[in-house]
Length: 285
Image (cartoon, helix red, strand yellow):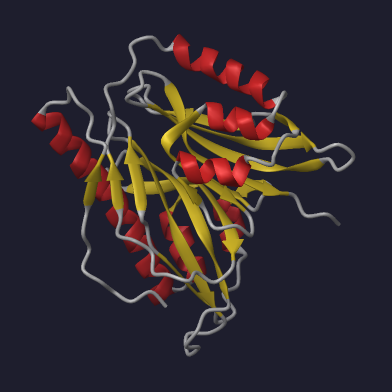
């Protein structure tokens, strides 16, 4: 179980050209997202898995398991069976408009509250949206599993936004170029459009944090990938966007199918870049 520790905030990549007032507004909004994630995790420990998800999911929230399904419908039928799920955010981003955010971090699962050690570990990716009543709710949630970590997770990192682009058509063009690049070489295509801060999530693997780590993870993936968009959203400030849907990847005679979740952000390079990419194979019956 994660040991409670003092909550430090590491402010990283503060965009040049943003005023102090804008910076403070972004920090305040991002802090609210992180605190919502922490409250979500606390509710899981004290109220149970089912009740916590029903409380913090938006009515139209999508859970990727990996097939997309309505989260409220899923957890209305979920049975905790005495299991205890705990997690914490260690990376968070926010849009300039302050109404769309993303958190990632580790999770662990125990068979019961009395067990000393968890039996399963992994990482989550959550997309958060500010509601009309100013509360924050999860609108997309995905996770992977991986072996037991060998080190404690770091403290949470805040990644603040850069000035939003004025031309909204730039993103559509970037997506088109990205889709075409994936069809030639999946691994190289992802790296071409990855942010320096990128976090890559693949099942049964520890996340690749940063572009250099992403190169190691993706270097051997030279398949021809096709991704379809079945769900999407973008911030009001046009600087943070999410996409999910099915993918297929041709590896010679071993085709692979599954689902993906990609978070795009307009960054300091003046281009749209992938800041988070999650992908999980479909189960083979």
